Length: 204
Image (tube, rainbow, N blue to C red; front, side, top):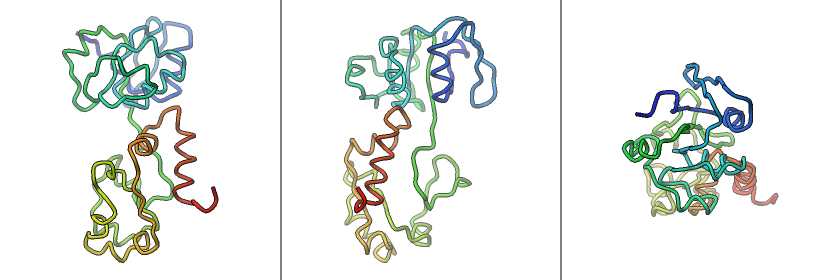
């Protein structure tokens, strides 16, 4: 059975520390619990694409033994076992891999000046009427690859009067752009450039 110390919720700095420091190492998870790693992790499972990318960016791709269903970068992780996702992992398969570190990082994502308030939580369900009330200048359609297109957005009650709709500020993203903007990993700099280009196309 995988021990509790195996399951860490870590930030990038903690991950860097875990891969390049002296041992034994004591770290703290997001709940403040103290966890001890007796030795450098050699068999790592990543359940979040951003963590997969970060592990590889730190030169430890060869230590990955399994990843979540959405991890697709860099290309070398394509051959690794798929273990579901952080919210619905395939525990039997995960345990069989005998990992000594399981990464289940959580990030709130990238944002510019957004109409979504921090008090609404990490993954808020935004009411369409709230969007009408806030009248955003730009709307990024992260569901566009799944068929959520501009016409469908404009058809929502009240949305035809949004500044974003009137001024051409509704942007349909492709899968690569969605992945880049939703994964807080080592490509975050590229995501910032993309976001800046999407919000201020005339300046880039």
